[in-house]
Image 1 (cartoon, rainbow, N blue to C red):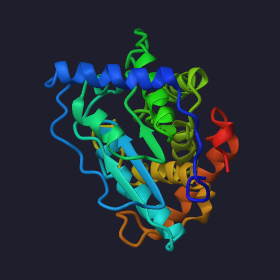
Image 2 (cartoon, rainbow, N blue to C red):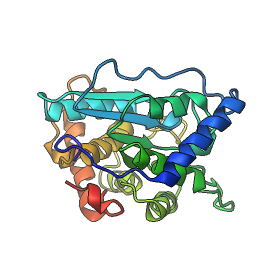
Image 3 (cartoon, one colour):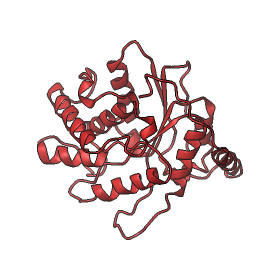
Image 4 (cartoon, helix red, strand yellow):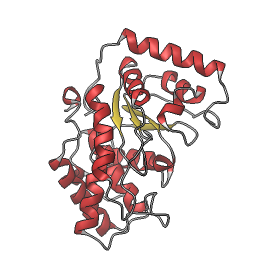
Length: 267
């Protein structure tokens, strides 16, 4: 997708106003949300630049780094740069976080990956998605493609449909791409139960789980089929398992297109 064409997304006046208001709020509340310092944007322009905004699910096992490695391996002649917003924040907290807003506005990003929409672990509480929608609008206003990164389900808990539906509801309100990470996790668990997808806490991803999510994100960002990516020599997952994960990611993407809610962004 983004490696093959320049994006010409029209700026929206309302979204620009949202950026201005959010940055003004951040100036008034510099300590809100515990941003924890500033991210360092890439030093030089790249063919594809992606900013990641999320919490520990993004940062454990360096999902942004895995995405960058996959895209670079798929097209070695093209440069890929990523930056990750500091802190372990929910998307609503990032609207008042100066470092997050500065990263978004610090340079033109061809895409943002947005993770950490609040959701109820018990399923009994409904949290606002207005803040996530604002991030989607701000990304579009800045000329980038928003990609919503829905978290995998917790081990042993049937919550994939609830999590994925929550993220797709955001995309229905404000068009964004949504790779099917939760369904892919379910497919992998059902078809290959020997592959460990979760960390010991049953919540965060294992290296294999993080790579599965990264394959779907990289596929969405680059327009490649998951099966087109080569093995990553430096990944903490053996080659045979990487091949299985590519196949699972491809199955999930065939069942639910990442571009179902952002058809204009599909290559």
